[in-house]
Length: 379
Image (cartoon, rainbow, N blue to C red):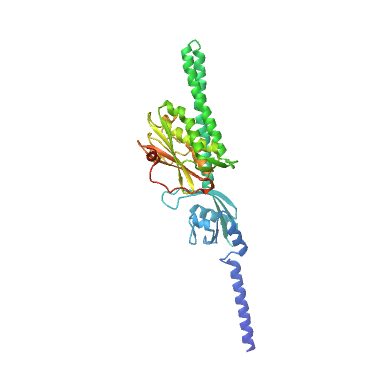
């Protein structure tokens, strides 16, 4: 009996030792609490793979981006990097691009870092979403290219006109004609620089340094006064209507600039002997200022892009009107800086209506929205 008991104890000890050795060779599927806690607070998409490329832990961001599905890593490029890192133990960095998860969705760009984790073949994959930064960088490059082009055109024209005047010094009529062209190009250059300064101002960290209560009536009257000369030259009537006495919160100069740009555009793209209506009305806790014209209208495909900087539906016509291509972009940023928005309704051949919606000062309650268009209300 004693021998039997002794043999059983020895066999049990050997069995436990064998299990311990097996556990030393094969890592536990669960990560230690310290590693799991660190992964939980990482801003990047984090994935931990075991020696068989099975996902042990994946952050919610990694699953949301579609990098992980179930226990599998879906990006083939990431899987190949992980295997290389597991094989030689060297940390690798790369950049990958994955397709959108739904039809029509843009691809996503990731900056990837893959490193070994522990001594059991586990690999840590970190993927940082770079899509927005790449988009911003592309916008910046396009903006610089567009600014360079827009500045080069009037500067080149001024240089050429100056040479022409010099050659035509003995012809007073030609000098007068070319001097007028120079004034036109100089004015265009001035408008472009002013628009660039305004756009830079409202895109800063503190676009409205001293907000105050602003009388909407004053903004409307000032914006119309600035456009009267241009409208009179085309026999276009500027009409103001709607509710009076409304106020909003913000910067009066910026609001006048935004509304002036809307009215100026309406005049520029309207035929002679028509009218442009500026209408003000309260809607809930907001104030809506609408500018309606009887102009050529905007094609449907362009309505989503007209607030982009330097975007023009018809480049030749836009240059003929003397526009800088920044007016509507300024309107959009001014609206955003005032916690508002700008929208457009347009139909080719039937005119356009741009509506600037701003928060009412003090959250003043207004009237419910009406289905009547500003043009109809002014008739």
